[in-house]
Length: 129
Image 1: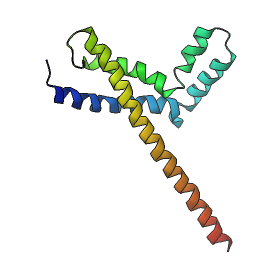
Image 2 (image 1 turned 180 degrees about the vertical axis):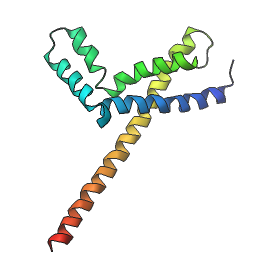
Image 3 (image 1 turned 60 degrees about the vertical axis):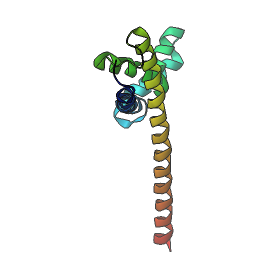
Image 4 (image 1 turned 90 degrees about the vertical axis):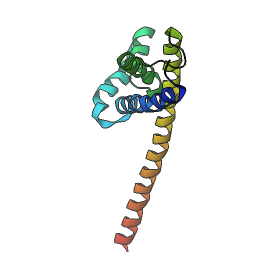
């Protein structure tokens, strides 16, 4: 059994790539076209299963579960228990920490965008006078 401090360190470190991948796919410009395609499919498909499948690629919380499963498969990370229950605990803990990271990032990003808008407004006022 891995020491608890090592498991905690891995938890907070592994949540970083989960958050980064989930945020990038669901928010950033590099995936804009595929995301818009998925959004369109969530609205115009009759099948609930198909709509929900495409929705996974537009919601950072939903997508983070699948990214987490991939990260756990790559790293064989378990939390607290050395059997299947350790994997289950790891999935939910990683998703939770990754979503905390994404929420913090979203708040920072909103603040940065607000500052940009305010600076542009001030520049226009200075140039206009």
